[in-house]
Amino acid sequence: MTKILPFQNELQGILPVVVGSIDYNNFKTLLFRIAELIELSGIEKQAIQYILDETIQDGLRSAKEEGKTATPLSKQMQISIQEKVRLAIRVTIARKITQQAYRPFSVRLAESQLLQHFCLIDRIDKIKVPSKSTLERYEKMFPENIIREMNTILLKAAISSEKETEENRLKLEESISLDEYFADSTAVKANIHYPVDWVLLRDATRTIMKAVKLIRDQGLKNRMDEPVEFIKSINKLCIEMTHTKGKKDSKKKRKQIYRLMKRLIRKVALHGLRHQEKLKNRWQETKLTKKEADLIIARIENILTQLPEAVRQGHERIIGERLIKNNEKILSLYDKDIHVIVRGKAGAKIEFGNTLFLAEQADGLILDWKLYQDKVPADSKILKESIERLEEEYDNYTPESATTDRGFFSKTNQKYLEKKGIKDYMCPRSVSELKERLQEDDFCEHQKRRAQTEGRIGIIKNSFLGNPSKGKSFNSRSLSTAWSVLSHNLWVLARLPAADFQKKEKAA
Image (cartoon, rainbow, N blue to C red; front, side, top):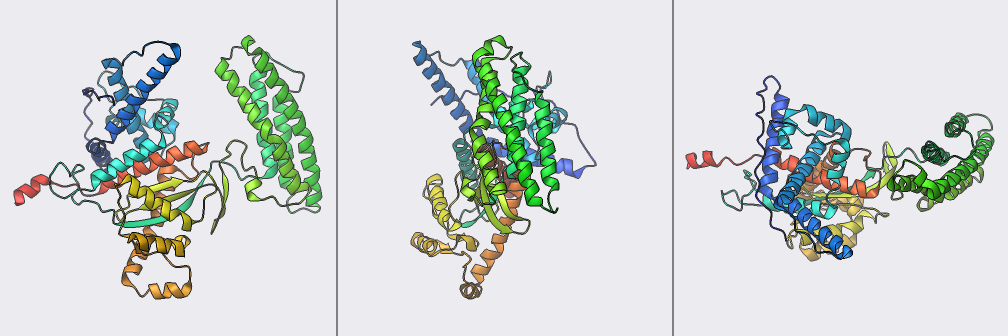
């Protein structure tokens, strides 16, 4: 384990005094308190330690492969890494709290003295603002398990006495409790259009032809019409397909149009394959780097690999008029880890994405979460694994009570909670059982509080994560979820009353 070197903060500017906007001053107070929580909790140290150890291990591996002796990190290099990690944490948390995408946040950071002060970049001589691409790299600097560890460290620091001791690290007026456990699940929508079968062929045409244009711009050409003409043709067919709805002989017209689409996509695939081969064999003749050429080749390959199945899927549903099972459908050509989630709710009967499980405590701090990559099991099967994760992360901690909706209710879960000595406040599926339990004051109180968990899910999805999530892969959505949970918990803790030890001493 590498020792973290002490380093001095840059000389920062003084924030101007702003009057007349209470919202600005509230936001300023919030950011100052979050900055204090980051320092007091020690989550920065955990992140810095991880990056330093990884950097040294990478250096050792590279030296071993080259048969050389690894060069130790210089003091200046180590301090530079530590500053970079600290900046990465703060800009990512600030971006999540301000609910902005990379590009708009980069602009806002450049013009906001308050955000610059929070991110520690408001130097007197110059202000260097991360670009949108740098912001994305900063967010992806840490794996999800490290962010989960940071969240655990934060919550452990919040579980402290009210006395002014070393143990009361976050200076909260009242310590938080993890005794009450409230759980629910939701669907995180993927950032895709509604997966209509024939729209997949439009997506394939656009992607292949854009890649072909990049190759042709480098002077590698096959005889064909301009790529934009193929895109125009597929768009025209898509418009015609849309206009068949509600018309006489609509099924017959849809079949005719889809056959034209199939004929067009065969030409598109052939041109894509030919240009891909040219680029593979002659990329040295272009101005592209090897990495750029490989990226274009992979982009075409991804579509060509899935295209036969996408064409077959549309043929089965439009021409054959046969249903396809959900687990056999291609929902997106660009994201394979998306599932059909049947919610049965008003306005969201069916959603496309991944299932997210959340568990919170009484103050709204999120204790546990999991974004499922594969088809998620029923709610009744994921309660046990959540409590086991809590036991592992919080030193054999077990909540005193567990409250869920009826989706989690099962005899297996009842027996498990009884075995663990956890009070069972799960909502029964049976109406008669529910009527009996509604006579219990504790059950009614906990179920009333559980309604707030629905609101907590809305805050995470709509304010911190984004609905739909902007991540273009499961790993991206999973990482964004972890950062959203950490930022949310800092936001909740920053709004809790802080202890004023000076007033307590005067009162004593």
